[in-house]
Image (cartoon, rainbow over all chains, first blue to last red):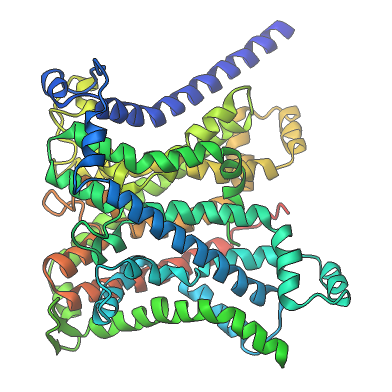
Length: 280
Length: 285
């Protein structure tokens, strides 16, 4: 009796491991074959087709991309700058606004917050044409400012998420610090921000991922090699060198590698906290 | 009074952002949709002609059908697989924490870049998929296979991310409930269907709403995989907006499509809220 139960439990473990192994392999296989292709010479790929082990592995595709004048170096730098500026702006301005909405009283607060929440329903594709017209009108088309301006002043999503968390700060602590003479900003910096480090870190990660990967807006508002981002460069590489797949896979590898590394470094943060972004 | 002023100063930057880059563009989208407007700036008021042309022509109807079909395939499949994966990861067997990280990797990658990778994998003669299968299937260029193939790639990208939410939901269910079910003689399947799934309803609701809304806006992945072809079989609504605006230079027509999408998404969100609000009966907190 006991051995039968143990055997069925063992079978259950084996089944779980088989499923998890399959999930891991199906997830990793596309990355694996694309990286291998990026390390294969164009000649070997033409002779042996896909799924051949690179012999010898070559960096020629990656080097070609990084050294050619219309290559990936400029897009990487542009994307890094864009993400850095948007991240800084969004964190500062979202934290300030969320703090006011969560812990301060002011006339018009609830109505204004309702407007912010309503804008959560606005899809990007609805605003992309008007934004293109607006920024072209003021002469910002194909500039760095056009890449960051629509996002740098904070995001309603971040404000909503932070407000939920800031509201959980105990009122007694707020009162105690007020009595000790803390000002409005002192309260934010010395109490609210330190208590909310995990959600702030999660939000930073989400912001970096979102804007490193953003495509439609940079595609529309930039043209030519000066201000294009890594996603736009990847896309034009693919259409320009349609069948040169070793080069194209080098491009996708470069586009994805930084975030995969970020993911591996912050794995615990990401897997344990993404679910905390569930809005109620 | 002074504190009110401080609060408004704190809100001011984001208010300028919301007003200029969200509210104003939405208003402008409605306005532009009433014009015949090209990329060079020539514009002529045409009233509701753009809407009439869209409803009379086949492109809008096609895009609505394509988007709806894409959603109907990708959302239920990715939710079901995400739940299945979560139940296995929830057992927390040694080593499963590595898998938990691996399956989320596609979520941090650009849909555009993943689309390019899968475009190569699914190439008829030089791609890895057909090399493995030993067949020559036109995954992305056959009119009947293209949309399911795009939906498959979207599911592949999202399952791990979705499973994170289900894992969090499973962690909130008290283990004592399962103990009781086991003592009552319920097998694993009945436990899943009659207990786990109903108890996860708040999580499922959240995921269903956000995933439906996201899949109605899908663009990057389709742009990379098929560009909307073959024969417009994968021309989702966002692709139609993009092509009307920046290929055909009909900004008015594109804005009308965008407005229709916006109205549709608001309606879907409200309907889902009401439909699920009546059905969420379990409060786990």
